[in-house]
Image (cartoon, rainbow, N blue to C red; front, top):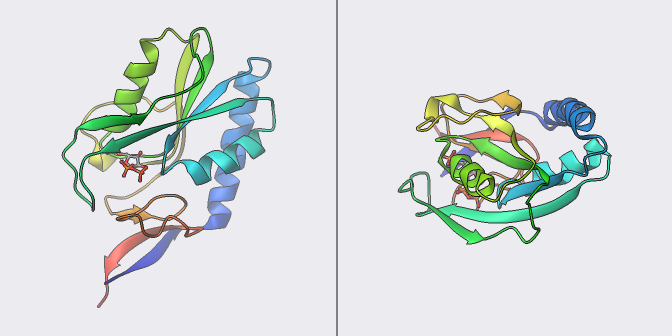
Length: 174
Ligand code: PRP
């Protein structure tokens, strides 16, 4: 069994979320943006972010999944649940917990762009550049994380550890 070790504390996360919120508030004031969270991982970040942004926003979610469980997956992205709000001419901000290979957000940004929103940008709390397979610009980024399997603050390993308030690394127990 593996034991999670904290690498980003809940206090550091809260401070970063507040900083990101200041930028988003400034950029989207008066634009009634639509924030689209990618489930399941983004549910914790989304709920903290919208309260910190504290301007009128609308919220929707998509469910995307990579095939396979555990730490490895095939690289194919599947749309399990679409956005319910019409996005044509809307200012859309995609809210993601982590960009790793980049495949999930690349898929969604392309998919949303096809429907002609007024703008579409990406906010990701964690960025793992070492995992990147496709390039995707991140407009609002929180932390760069190392090449390790991270869990907590919404992120899972096999559906475990999402509830942890800190970002943790799974490491082998000695
Ligand atoms: C995780 C994470 C991101 C995605 C990033 O989701 O929450 O959405 O992987 O991966 P990528 O950049 O390598 O494409 P996952 O597919 O595990 O589903 P979950 O959000 O339900 O945990």
